[in-house]
Image (cartoon, rainbow, N blue to C red; front, side):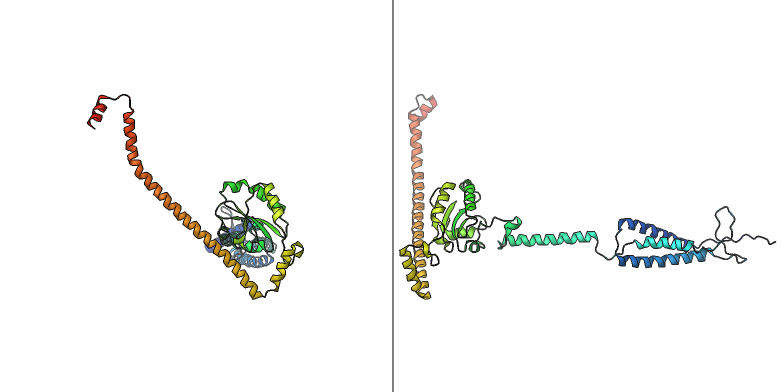
Amino acid sequence: SHSHTLPHTHSLPHSLTRKMAEEEEEVAAVAEAEVAAPDMQPEQTAATTATAMEGAATTATMETAASAAPTENGAVEKPAAEGEEKKPSEAPTAEARPKATAKAVKAKAKAPESGGITNGECCLIVVLVTAMLGAILAILYAVDAPLPWSLIGLGPPEWELSPSTWEAQTAGKEVFVKFYAPWCGHCKAMAKDWDKLHGDYANSTDILIAKVDCIGAGKKLCTEAGVRGFPTLKYGDPSDIKGMSDYKGGRSYKALSEFAAANLGSRCAPDKLDLCTEDEKVEIKRLLSLGPQKLQEMIDEKVAAIKAKEAEFTAVTEDLTAQYNKAQTDKDEAKAKLKEPLGLAKAVMREKNTPTKSPEAAEGTAEL
């Protein structure tokens, strides 16, 4: 028989205890991360698994070394619970070690790697890009860039013209245009009838029913057309906006429709001789016989004559305006001079026509 000697108590070093506590906290954190970020790329999973295996192996080695501290007789013991005798400790079995390692590896394999773009960062990028695009569109819209704004719900319809769209929209067509102001009551009253008229010719290849906002983007066009009141309706050749004719008829749909049917559409032209009278055909033949330079000189002469007439009209208008202003001033001054003695005369007349007077009033009149 041999005597049984109680082994000396060997507690784990403080550093190892702390290491094991940190390892347990890390495993718990990884388990929580698995719930928060379940999707991982294969490369992330492989790298995380390798890291977890290294950490688990190191911890298992340290645990084994600490728990296998020899006693005086060379036996390997593990710490006994408080109040119990210590028994010789046994080395961790081959089955126990893989289970602990596998558990740590499984938990660490689910931990996401840092360095990628998070969902929050993606949202921030989308917001910034959207804001930049919005700012660019706002600038382009402010400068009246020739873009199809109506297709994206911005700006007026295509048939509301501006300087940037006038030429493209009116090319090869005869136009009937309403120049208006958004606040104009008469403009609002005829808006439905004008829109209906536009619908009648929406698919026409040679007639355009259009409108121009003289307060907004079309202000320059209204100035060029000589618009002085709202609404102003003009028709004719859009290439000569100053030479377009004024419409003087009614503003109902019936009146507008009848006028458009009778006065708009294909006209006599070199490529439409079937619409020309005999006199017009003769004139076209004469013009075609002229050389380019001679024809241009004739055009310039006619344009200059029109401008001279416009200047003459403007001068007469300005002279009449000056005369009117002078007459208005003379009238106001004369009225002011006549009103002073007239006021006194009326006061005296009221005094004379008063039937009864107080003693004080009668005394005052006698002194005068």
